[in-house]
Amino acid sequence: MELEIKQPEHIVPSYSMTGDLLSYLRCRLQYRYHNGSALPPSRPVQQWFGEFLHGTLELSFRFWQENQSLYSFPWPCTQRTWGSDPPEWDTNDIGKFADTVESSLRKQGKEARSADARNSGYRRVATAINQLGPHLFPLIASAEKKVIGTRPVPTLDVELRCSNYEVHGVIDVLTNITLGHVTDANLIRLCVQSVCSGLAGEYEVIVDYKGSKRPRYSEPYWQQGNWQLQTYAWLRSRQPDALPVAAGILIYINELTPGTKEMQGLKSGIANGTTDILPEPGSLDEQLVRMWRPGNNTDQLSLDFRLRRAIRVVPITPESIQTALTEFDDIVRRAETDIVQESYSGNIVEAWYPTCEDKDTCVACDFRHFCPKPADSPENYELNTPTAP
Image 1 (cartoon, helix red, strand yellow):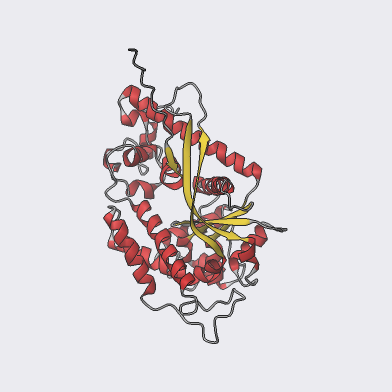
Image 2: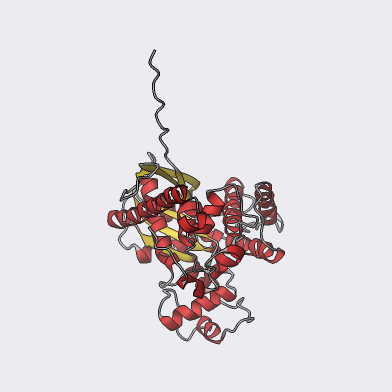
């Protein structure tokens, strides 16, 4: 009796847009230790705030959606009528949502790195709900929509373990109907119309959130955010209930409560001409930004200016989608090549040599103490740096 030879398993690795692809771009070595081994990060700071933000926003939206007649905002930006005296959120409602999400994350081993970081997260998510929520919540047709798709992996000289990969993410979806039901006082509608003029017919706008400042043109995160939205648009277009995606929105939550990093980034962007949302000349915002120094209070910056800094609209076209897909396909190829090289050499650092140039990422990294190229020591970059595949 002849026995069949067991065929090798067909591997289709799964890549999260933010947890894998963008993390790999931040630092290959950190990504390898966090995602390719049994070494969970003891302080996954970026993971914690991102998931804390998404979870609290979703719970708040669901609660608002189910209790519109009892709990609402004073909605200046919607045509709907909520009664003569619009009810307000209970003082502890947002805190309860945040506590629920934080407790769930703690069970997964995800916690803020310090009490200050935790308090900052609570403060920023409360500001997002109270100040961004009146513009955002009435527009959401579908919240936390999971999108997933499969792509071929480009091959070069190295034989990889797979021919295809899965990419997935989570988005909120706005439609032409929800956008059409709000007034011109709705800032998100205004931002979409200013960037994507002439929108007509049925379409969708997808939304994702960043627990960070608005990047400058000169920073890699600016282009990466664009690619992320374009790829999400492609994934969304493959779902049966989807309408054509006309635009994507990234919301930089930290711009709603700007601190030292946000203000330094804004001032640097103005000086170098590398930022796109500026205060009106001669306005109080312009004076506050010009005179700002570390330690100064930013509470006097107008809500309109902070919201505009937080909201970034990106047009979606077939050409821009294809460009982004090509970029992310190549990122997966590079990650898969690193996996192969590690299996050949048996050396993690040699195969996944660190590429981190962001000091904040480096400071929060558990592996910085034995990293051959920490971001705050640029001289190490010149020492025996292997050529990336």
